[in-house]
Image 1 (tube, rainbow, N blue to C red):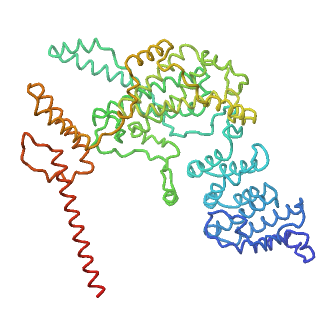
Image 2 (cartoon, one colour):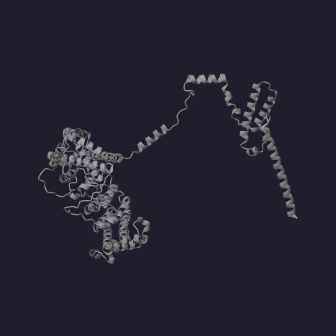
Image 3 (spheres, rainbow, N blue to C red):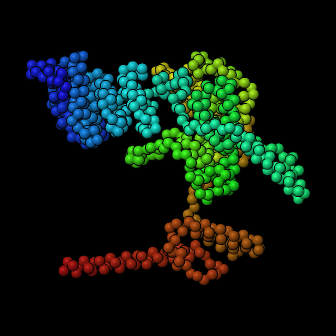
Length: 633
């Protein structure tokens, strides 16, 4: 407890809600909370009402009471920091309960709205990085509650922004990458997308991202001349072969000489020097730097093409991403390094805790250069970097700058005076097309390139948004009159339309249809008999009548017509009978006779079954009477 606060610990000042008085009762309130985890957050119902009543001010909370309450919270915060183990989970829960109480007092208008953020800022300033990473779980779980009513640019928004920025300054981008990402995601959830504090309005590049690589001794001869001399020696050796190789010598003399390749030592320096241009593209506004960048990128792409060809020869698959260096066989033994470079140390224990990979920057050792070039992922990363830089340069052409003339409030900070010349524009476009083609030799590469194009297209949209002045994305809410007007128009559109008066489409066709109906007696189609389902008995009567007519028929046509009529009616009647009399079908007589009447047979079987049922019922009733008489006796 602070000695300054302890001076106010006099009984006569209890009624004045002094910091000591509030601290004592707040400590008692926290002790009454039974909770072992951060979640769920505390609410008013979780607090002891009697203790809360003693902490509350009897009158409206004035500045003195709010300051005293904040001082009491800070005193308890310091007591927890000094007396408890920061690695213990109970300590994290105690911090969370204290800030939850501050949130509750803020929601009850007992304290200033900035008090929870002030406590969090004090808390994070007094803790080490591992403890801050655990405490950040509290911020992530209470983000919606903490940011209620937060206005950007003032109040608790400034404290929250200052807290997160201070944490980011303390963290190492190489070792605390995951924690940095969590903080940035938290800020993106807490602040609107058009928040100016999160926008690089001036378009500053991260020039602090310096890539350090080994310094190699300068060579006496240009390494490019070595390959040229070797080519000349091979050509001379071929010509000395005599007549047997004279034809091949003529062919070789007609072929264009291959472009001289840069040695690996010189390419190493040129390659890693391009990282300075990637980190600060404005360096290329100087013509000498731009020419040097052109040569370096062309040499790099030539070496990458050689690595692709070597991969295709050794494995049969382009861009396999193997670890063997170009020009070496897969089963070749590694050559021991002559010079030992400075090794980067890493904390294995911390890496096991985080459970993630450790790859914050490139490994720039000369001994690893051949292996890195043979790696597909490494080559892709460098080529994508080059594409991003080329897109930046292509945005500085006169035609691209003309699109910015339509902006009403342009951001002059991201509009450079430098303009790309026509020949440089042609080179940039050609090189970008070559990079795009080299990245998609197969289906997997095409999918990767589609992803990269999507990301670059979205990034281009962000660039235009920033150049336009970062207009807000918020759309104002509709007024009451607009909502009522929309409802009225919607009800008008949903009203049923008036029936069309002409059934046939036009008045002439309608009259023609009515006159035709009168002539053809189409009204007979509305007769109820047409919609009535016939019965089994009606078909049976019709079959009996057809059988009588068949006896008097003399002509073959009349006989055939009678048989067809009987079969049709019999089939229809049996279909109707199958719904209610289907169990009786297996009792038919199997004899087939010409004069057989299936409908009459079905009626006889039904009558016989009814008689059997009636007889069985009478027998059961008689047995029941006899049994009842015996029972009564």
